[in-house]
Length: 259
Image (cartoon, rainbow, N blue to C red):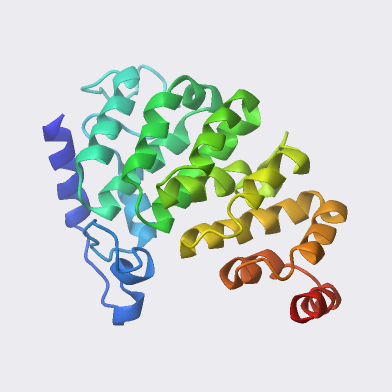
């Protein structure tokens, strides 16, 4: 497994980094100055391009290629997820870990659900919003197909790990426009309620995200909720939850928030 990790790291390290002002360096913008990972400050499109070029053990187009023209693979496809799992859990580079997330995105919802234990274990290493959101995209797709997975979200909602708490609400809908069978507002509400007073900034950003996406689905239920909770919503959550509202609706909410 280690040789595949080294191959992935060599590939990513061969890409030139981009010089940025200090506040926009990935360690600060993505990692919040607290991440334990090393950031190479490589443009994300370049990382995706590297992934799409493939590896000795995997090529993104392998499944679509005809057998007679298919590039020979060193590793059977069923084992590739295990390699990317190893890369995720053993690399210390933010950009290299993204490769594992990109591979997970190529799996069907049913493949992800079949490997839920492995994919959910990736949460244990998350310490930045970019990795967290990439996982939310995958987990929301899984939940869309299998509502029994919501039991894991309920556990994350009460976790001592702030990134699991964030995942418990962002991973419900991610972007609501992509959900075919979303959870009801009745099911989502207690998850938000439990985190309204959370002290973690990124959890609060997640609360705002979930409120915003819930509003897109259930405006007639979420708007009254925003009115009732106007004074209780954290500033970080408030900005995210109201950013898509009309000026008139924002003005209405501000009256309740100030009074």
